[in-house]
Length: 355
Length: 134
Image 1: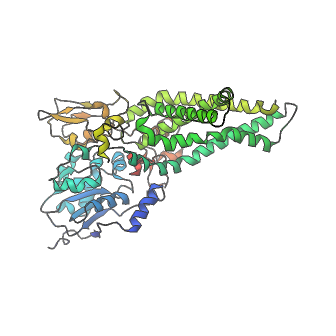
Image 2: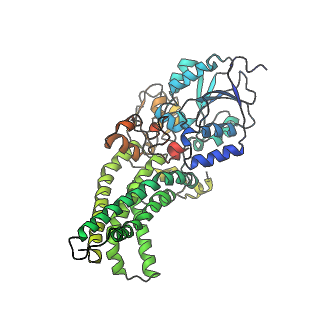
């Protein structure tokens, strides 16, 4: 079979992952080099495809190509890699780079457009927001079929004569799928959270230091800074709750709006803290409650905001829903945050007889 | 996915549990224009459309996440939806904050992933598997 003659520029792809591929997955899950993890766009051959072999289309995010070629293990296939600037299929489809134009253009430049025999394109289902199948069919003469959402379902899809079950056609958001997101979420949010707490501490420290000169016993800047850090850094658990625990507990938290779910989680965290302090550390409940009130405002608004932020990572929140939720949640979060912050600053200034 | 949970009705893996706010979607479906080609059923990741007696019906409107796949692939424009990405960060970055010049080129639409282009190695949001991570 002279399969390669009609398409001049084809590289062969392997259908197995090497250690390097696994290491690459680990790195991108931690966000390392995620936006330069690419494959050159173009046509690739898996095995020894011929004129009757269908064409599988994917994005040039290396993880997308890797999952596809592994799912097609032991089969012959053409793999057409679109230039999506290194972004995965679903996101690129939302942006339009995994799109009608790019697909038609790529079919042309690779010479695939003139393919004889079976003209069948199998697209990933999640590429559909960017591609108009009727338009592609009209422009190229190829028949377009959307495959499954997950690459791992492709063998079953092919073996059953290109039939996908409803389960293969619907997105899930299982515990594992949520856990995978945590490293990248953590990496992206640690710095902003620490920065915020540092700014609040610094501002509080200067405030207490400056005001202490009005009173009878001025304190050193160092002392006011350590007081201020003591006041604000107990809020670090807000990051833990919002970034790690929230994705894990998402389906169990009551409410539909993410900001509400986040507020509930923060309240549960506070109750847990109070219970532990009271029962095990024997702190009297009235002194606990008095101390904790400003933290309630801050913790609830921060975790609620982090929860709202997580909408971008889920596969089921809609733009209309997010807009609706934000209209109410953002002002409430902002007020809660300001009340808590000002309260703690006042606490700080009145502490240890500064004033 | 662990389907054993599904059978027991455990909330972890049913899609219903992950339904977002009700009655907000901009999805519009015209029964008159529809030719029941089933393309929408093929592309929808939330089984919003279904078949009854051989014709396509809107079976679970509130599950719609407005990804726009159905409208984009409908040959008769029987489906309309304001497509976008349900990402609070992207909405903040693109709509409510004043966009600084260096950021402008990166945030022309609502989609968070949109902003992750060659200009920068940093995405403004997107931890996401739903979104940019997967």
